[in-house]
Length: 205
Ligand SMILES: CC(C)(COP(=O)(O)OP(=O)(O)OC[C@H]1O[C@@H](n2cnc3c(N)ncnc32)[C@H](O)[C@@H]1OP(=O)(O)O)[C@@H](O)C(=O)NCCC(=O)NCCS
Image (cartoon, rainbow, N blue to C red):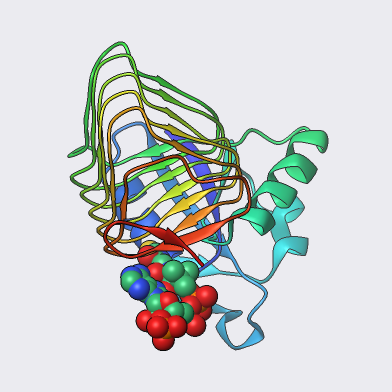
């Protein structure tokens, strides 16, 4: 059983913990979180001994960075990699993933997500609850597909981009790096790098 530390004990961290608790070959051994009020407590039966400084004191085989902020998650990912840590990918047993999908390090694939044939999920990417990643998508690294989002075939979501809750991306559309597509919005054409777009159809803000 691989022993995994979850960085971040907030709502997203607890959803990741739930998925990890259901995995057969890995188990959460601790949360680390900078919120002092959590230190010394337990959440979901998992101890929160302290902040990131505790990592070296906890016996572990891997870490998952359960932080929703893409930029912060990217930064911590590269720091941990440089320190020689193994970034563990959490996959909820009730996600449906085609056998030829490739998934990088440190990803979080949550309950009800569907990832179809020949998609590529790059490092440190969140594929959140009940989202649909159609065939031949390329997502990430450090991206976030929020709950219930639906991505058509051959969509690309570049580095650190975020597709909001319940959003739709039409087939072959590119969501540029660090772009944000608003919740419930529909991207019908490519979004430039760093842009924020919302509405149906999505318009750049
Ligand atoms: C798109 C978004 C990033 C914009 O945030 P913001 O820059 O703070 O924008 P504001 O809330 O100031 O709204 C600006 C305008 O955009 C509109 N707008 C904001 N979000 C919208 C959305 N999702 N769909 C349609 N219109 C939206 C607002 O009504 C407002 O319109 P107005 O100028 O006519 O009054 C944000 O609203 C959003 O949808 N975030 C996604 C959150 C999410 O899915 N998180 C995942 C959690 S797991």
